[in-house]
Length: 116
Image (cartoon, rainbow, N blue to C red; front, side, top):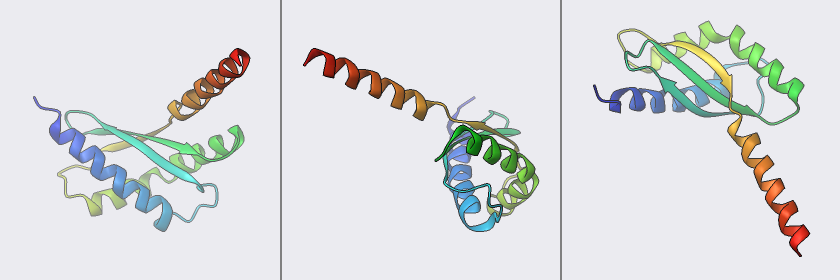
């Protein structure tokens, strides 16, 4: 089976999710959130949403809790916007790749400074 459809659905969900989080969701804990990716299973039953938050570790935890609490609302909004037979069940995960990239960049700068 091809992965084209789950990828397309994931990209559409990413676009709609960003719009929902910035315009529809009124929770003050959800601020400065960027949706970095959505992985949808091949049967389109589950979607894992990856996000980043500008702020400290405490802000990340609060944002994750707020997103988990608003999961039903977000899923219903996604269902209204994307025409699918069944809206995927949504789970949220913090995207560690940004922090990992920043850490590597910092280490490379330190090595470069030591060489000079």
